[in-house]
Amino acid sequence: MRARTWATASTGAILASLVAALPAQAAEAAPATRVDLRALEWSPCEDIGPVGDETLECATLTVPMARGDDGGSTRGQDATVDLALSRVPATGTAERTLLVNPGGPGSAGRMWAAHTHRRMSEELREVYDVVSFDPRGVGASTPAVACDPGFFTAVRPDTVPAGPDEEAALLDRAEAHARACADNSGPVLEHMRTEDTAHDMDAIRAALGEERIDYLGYSYGTYLGTVYSALYPERVRALVLDSVVNPDHPWYDSNHLQSRALDRAAGAFFAWVARHDDAYGLGGTREEVADAYYALRERLGTAPAADTVGPTELEGVAIVVAYSGRTWPAVASALSAQVNDDDPAPLVDLHETYGDDAGSDNGYAGYLAVQCTDSHWPKDWDTWRSDTEEVHDDAPFMAWHNTWYNAPCATWSAPADDWFGVGDTPYERPAYSGDALVVHATGDGATPVEGAHALHRRLTGSALVIEDGGRTHGVALTGNTCVDEAVTAYLLRGELPEAGPGADLTCEAGPEPRPREAQSDPAPDLQRIGPFGLDRASDSAEMVE
Image (tube, rainbow, N blue to C red; front, side):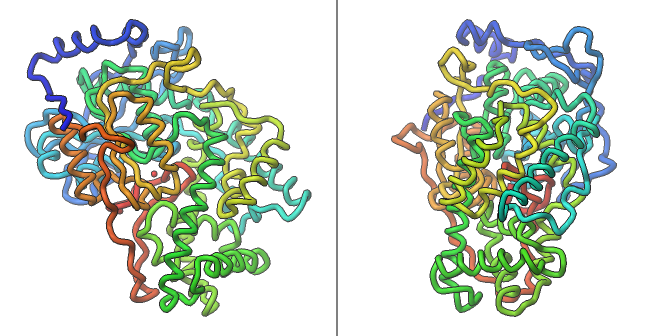
């Protein structure tokens, strides 16, 4: 095993040695973060509760809204942001703090202190305080971003335009939504980049009194962790990045690549349904099941199920199959009930469980506020159309859905900046070179596995753990013993798997799900899902953003 044994020397000595070992450029670039509230006052949470018997506490941290390149407040800018934090204390004597981000962007994160602590092994719970937070603009953090709560009112227009008139109407709808975001969000809308949240993370570290922080990020949280570790390399003790956003592709390109991955994941679901044709009656081959799905989608365009689920709402339900195999039985049963029995109830129930509604406004606003300003987007709609049609021809499952989800970025009011790339070119920041653990499932539909290999190459001190055959978006601490033991060994003792070709450690995925015994069986308690993460917490043991 490669091991980094946690030193027993004083924290100051460790920090000094780390800074001395850094490249000159990285050491000089370390920003000093101003924190208005240095001592956090933890008290019982008023608006959220634990998922089990954890002791869950909340606090608020005030940080600058506008930041300079060094992470400090911008001269002449006095506006602040209040970050909502949560903490589950260690069951024993706290030796370390694990900061957790569940993904997004736009996901409220405070519930993830309780979720993560609950999933940890007892030896981790004994020594770790677990802290999570609602990123700026999101959840209980204030000021909050907002757009239009009525945007998701069913039945929404079909995402696949039937012709130029329908496409023009969809484009008008996206532009109107971008205007609503500008009108209803205030000045924080211009300070929502991933870099802003990374600086907030360091403010949290400082307020906790920690010289260095341990970080666990899922999905979009991997990009946040990548940015943080590049900005503050000397502040990182351990870095676990799970279900990786590819650092080589800004959001516009990344979304098109994601659409292809979502389609591959849907194909795996269709094939599973076909293997259980005796239970679902949707076809005996993957192609037959796919045909049944797309035929249903077309019918819902003229006759929405229970006047609630049209083609777009159906996509909001179906996308969950790309995030977790645990959803497959529930979705297959709902499709079967609608197609074979003309019974819309299970499909409507899944829409109410997984789909977007007025409560999704803040999460969607937060998603757009980050994605639209993290990198540049094409201004010419012809480019969007051409690229989407090309993807749709090969991967129709979510190509247009993904495009319209991001289309407000074409006319977003807040200025975009260059993508925060890490590497060794003049246009990139030096990547973090310390130890890190990268985790990914090969069949993840939300973040293609190629991103994990790309980040592993960029983070030269990292080890890569692959769950072979896994279809869960978010693998660490979800019950795969092989993966969880690697994560535990790294967090507790600094041990990384021995270097190997490709992945450093390959773990076999668990068995595929079994068909539900009855359509009345409850669906998994997962979170609402946006293209790069999840919008609210649940107590799912296998679903992560």
